[in-house]
Length: 220
Ligand SMILES: N[C@@H](CCC(=O)N[C@@H](CS)C(=O)NCC(=O)O)C(=O)O
Image 1: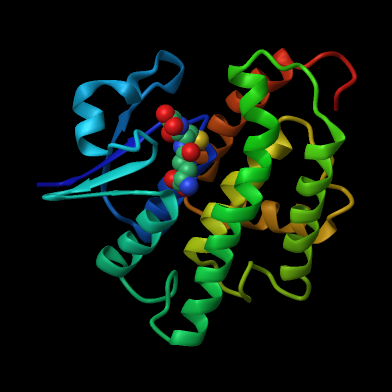
Image 2: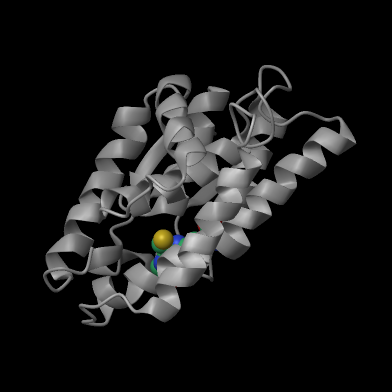
C-alpha cells in the first residue's frame, strides 16, 4: 500500500510536509482535505487523526501527524541518503531544534495573527501579535547568518518546514526586508526544493490573498 498525505494547500504546515516529501523523493498520494469546508471533521478523517489536523500521513497501518514528525519520518524511512536528516546526533539535534522552533515559535506566532482573520472575523493585526512575530523572524535571521540553509550549507527537512511558514507570512505582505538573511534563504529554497512553485508558492499565495482580502485597509 502506498503513502497517503492528507493535505490542504493554504496550510503552511501542510505545505511544509509536502515539500519535505518532494525533497526526499517520497511518492505520496495527495488527498485534499478542505479546511474551509470543515472536511477535517468528517468521521473518516477523525478516525485517522483524532486531532483533525493537516497534514496527516498514512503509511500502511501507521498514521502520523504534525508536519515536522512527517518530514523526519519520511526522510528516515524513504530518504535515498542521509542529507535531509542526517543520523549524526549533533547534526540531527540542530535540525530537530529548528523543527521545534517552527512548531513551537514561528508557526504559532503566524497563526496568532492569521487564524482570527481567517476564521473569527478579525480585520486588524495588533501590536501584541506583531512584536512576537518580528522577534521570531529575527531569530531565524540569526540562525541563517553565514549559512545557506537553516542548519548550515545543506538543505534539510527543517528548511522545508520553516520556508513553508515564512512564505505564508510573506504572501500576506509582511515586510521581510529587515531580515536580509531570511529573504535570501527563501529565494534559495525556492530553487533548491523540487516543485517549490507548484507545491508551496501557489498555496502560500492563495493563503496570502485570502488573509489580505479580510484585513482592513492599511493593516500591512
Ligand atoms: N503543528 C501542527 C499544526 C497543524 C495545524 O494546526 N493544522 C491546521 C491547518 S494550518 C489544521 O489542520 N486545522 C484544522 C483543525 O484544527 O481542525 C503541524 O505542524 O502539523
